[in-house]
Image (cartoon, rainbow, N blue to C red; front, top):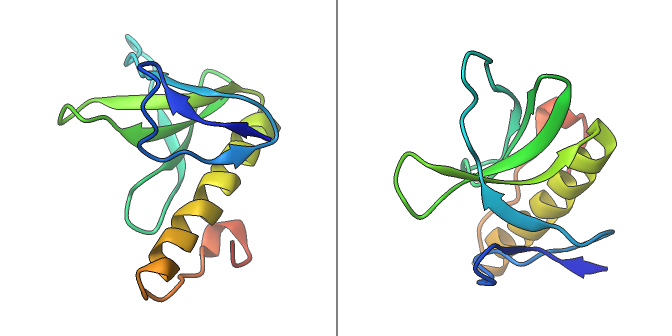
Length: 109
């Protein structure tokens, strides 16, 4: 199991997943449209696609900018996304907040 970190090595939301990934700045495409496929309960992460590739986005520390992780085939991105959602939901539960059901994925994460 790997740990996700961003390019500076900070662990804003470190999560164990099947492979090592690193958060990198998301560079908005020129002309193409990023399609968001699913958004986490409070917008912490988004499963997105662009030009046949999938990836996970999160807001960067700079307002209006994003970071991405796990760019590639659907299975790669969705595996990272589900791992992030599980960790995110566990963080909510640790604060005594109710775990939400993510309808588009068809089952509780």
